[in-house]
Image (tube, rainbow, N blue to C red; front, side):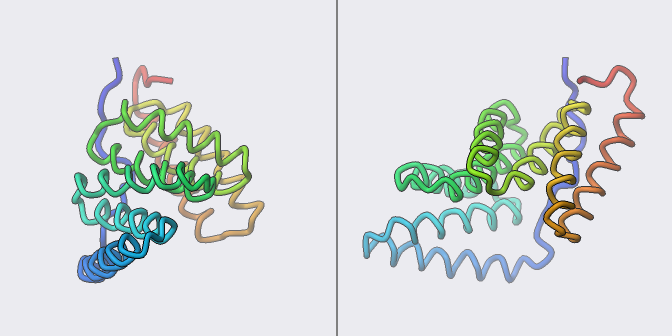
Length: 182
């Protein structure tokens, strides 16, 4: 049986006003894009709003806009947008503690990222956090290790530092869990 653990390095808004403005701006952009029939602009607006709502802790609209963004990315056959929005939607579901619903989206996002060679480190990092919340330490640590290798190879110091923090935290928590799930 998997135990639910406390949230693992979740990201929330530091500046709620800026996010609220972004949501308002993208809501207008979505309305304009719908009126113009611009599916790609609708995709971008929905994806951005999904992230912003999640960071504000408003998870129902985060999921709703995430689902719309995933559907549009599939319709437009846009792999990079599909990867990013699968991970956004999965993360919103994770924040709602719906890990079972999030898992296949994380898996699909990771597989597609590896196949097309985009955002693989992003997909691994976010999936690792979800796995950590489920106490699936070996899998989480493997995700963080792979994400770190990619980020170090790309020389993205700030992203590598974030991954190092997640890896160290996962290792520390895993070491303190008797009978941790693998």
